[in-house]
View (spheres, helix red, strand yellow):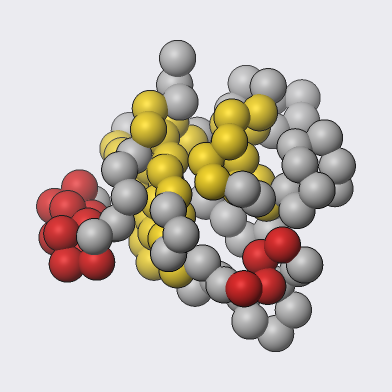
Length: 111
């Protein structure tokens, strides 16, 4: 089951697992998705807007938060300009970054 965060990014189950991760799917969730370097597994929330993607995961008994600025190449492949992922952050650090950068809201995908 794929849940769109903000195309081409989706939260989906990892193959043969009950864990969710963030995937980049340039042609939609049924074609050629990649997880290369993106936060996961154990993703429980994510969000996106035209500028940023945000992700939250629960790992090793604690919540971790990530964000990255979107790049023009995200639909064609990262090439020489990959996203620069910031994190893992604790909630207070993420909240500070969220206010400063006007990050998008996290949407709970755990249900």
